[in-house]
Length: 169
Image (tube, rainbow, N blue to C red; front, side):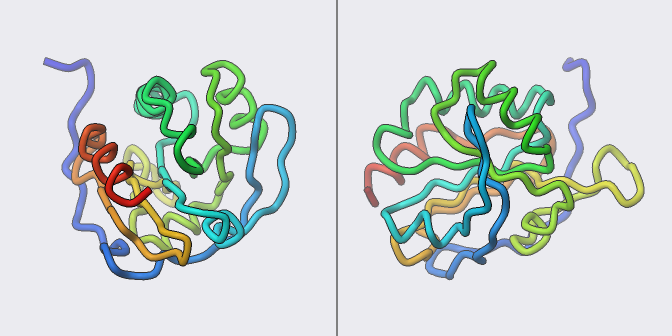
């Protein structure tokens, strides 16, 4: 038995394959600095893998980024994350985990809400975060692959994501 409860999440109303991904502008963080960047600025340069993850420091975020780093997807396309963590917390995660990707900071969870994947954090009234989710966007911002967690914790099928990348990149 795990040392934590597995929580069933309600249905999500997220963008589906073939739909346009909601655009947004937030601080985009790397190991050295951050700047406000629109998601559309990224996918105009080529496909983007947008990965929503729990706050930095939570074990699912660490597992997700370790797996993606080890698979080296960022060598094939732009891989960006998004969570409620601050730019300062993101800088620490990027440095400590050796992540070669940038992370959007969305402390209000407004982006997660626009994507229909926000959920109340550990039963804390008014505190929300994104559930784990992965969206592969083409160079026009159209979703080519979507996975959204139906329980917490949950992790994407990394082989399935890798196959989607191979099919669309």
